[in-house]
Amino acid sequence: MVIFFFFGLVGFAARGMADGGEGFVLASIISGVFFACFLILFAIYWIGYLLKGHAIWQAERQAESDGPSTGQQPED
Image (cartoon, rainbow, N blue to C red; front, side, top):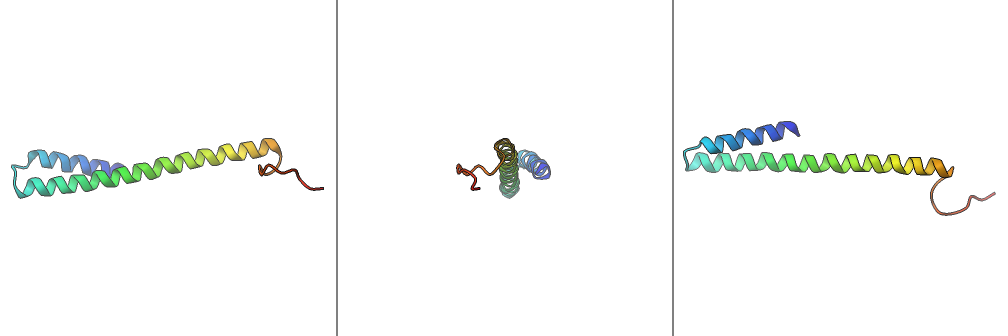
């Protein structure tokens, strides 16, 4: 994720140094692709982080109730 961010910055800097024409378009496309990859990986990372936190919360809640949290009473 960090590598894509770095490459996106490098591509953006190259776009700024391009004198126009074909180099400008190519650098714009490359920096856009790298930033898009960064955003996708960033979103995947945070979704995983939130799901991990939810799983921990759910396990703690289940441990407090001494059983699965299905809303049903255990059978004898």
